[in-house]
Image 1 (cartoon, rainbow, N blue to C red):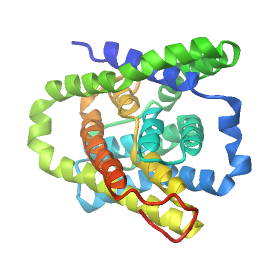
Image 2 (image 1 turned 45 degrees about the vertical axis):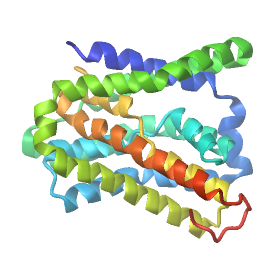
Image 3 (image 1 turned 180 degrees about the vertical axis):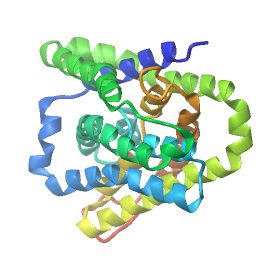
Length: 292
């Protein structure tokens, strides 16, 4: 089975669904609440550095190092908005962070991956066609987002109906995608499961801790902290898998293995986090000194 025939349509569909939920005000929240928005963006943009540090500490194979940094470069889509709502977080902030990070990382991702590939990829003869990656991001991500935003602007009721249907398909589609790659690369995953499982879990937990400390330093209140922790922790596995398997970019599904395992652990850890919040039921007071 040619997995790229599945992954690219799923990624495009997810990005279109994201665009259907966005409005101009979502991109302008940085003006009104700059500290929270910039804090969330800083946490997301520093994820690749955390991933590289984890890879170095664990002495990962160059291919898995590139794959781990790749998933760290791909911010989560609209699913993070749902998690923020479940965690009684700041949904407006979540939507704005999703919108801004999705657009910004379309351009930062090729730059970061070019540097990482040049640094560690030479050991295994891996090169990154940066122009191809940028073009693929524009066609499969930016264009669907823009089309969704346009439909939302001119036909808001239609956009809401479509988004309602597509949002129900997003998680099953991602799990289907992860399942296909898991089966295709089951031997490599089984051989490296212990070290890669520990690597992706470490990345997720260190990133969440960093986001928590960043929120504490900025004095953000409880709902903002919950949202930023979720936004930083959630990554777009479909985007990482699309880049790894695309014949125009890496054309090697092994680069997607960290993303597959991250998608699994991401849902386990963040659902546990949401469940802990619901059990604890803390107050949503805007005191800056609390850390969840």
